[in-house]
Image (tube, rainbow, N blue to C red; front, top):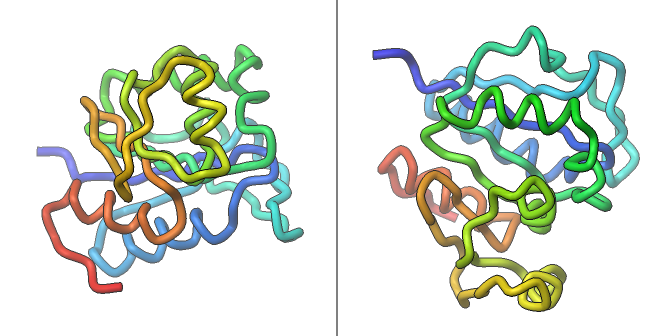
Length: 168
């Protein structure tokens, strides 16, 4: 069986907190993890840091799980054919896809967001306005998609995927 590899997708102006939580969680569990973005140049984050992704799309190994941290205007990359091609390329091989605080908008724009999701207040109204049902839970799994309220709820969802409890 192939190892469970976790990839963190760095959208422009992504949440460093959510990306770092996912990477540290993977490290503590001994899971291979990497960051991936459209190119190998530095990717600016919300709080002002700049991260250099481990891989650009064409070179990234296929992940079993993909974390999409929240970002400023996360729906914009889903309007770019290069980002959509990456999502399409990895989709069938994914066991799980995890959404950060507002990354639901990326997946909705890409046409892959399930009709029921968990989401934080900052994005719940937008999703309900688009016809999605938002449930009051830290995370909700529908198929391979784990929609979360973001932040520490992302850790709960990641732990559910591997079947190990996390202490907050």
